[in-house]
Image (tube, rainbow, N blue to C red):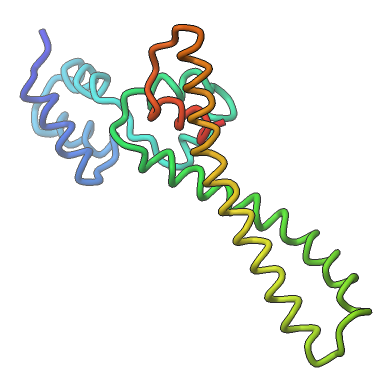
Length: 166
């Protein structure tokens, strides 16, 4: 039989930042049976850190969507999207920086060249982030419209999570 008090305690302690192994070892030292501790730990889902979300998005997208489907709000999905967009933006800005440098070098006097190059690169990065975020919200709406056309019953939050994690 499940010890609901132990499960609640495990949730609370994990929520305070202790690792699963620390909780397990501490409870066993406190006299709880290994089977009860393991059962309680198995009933508390692992927190989805950024690294775990990234790993699941690459290796098991359906598993990730199953875990985040009922997550409240868009905070985690939005943060994930923003971080991935920032990484992609940096990777996009580097070649754009080189192209702009080659183009502006012949057009601008040497005094303005460095300042203009930095400004254009920052602008490209900012536009890339803006396009990624705004595009994700618009795409989620489009996905939801098509889902409803085919009698889907998902929510906008779920559609946004599909876009953010894919």
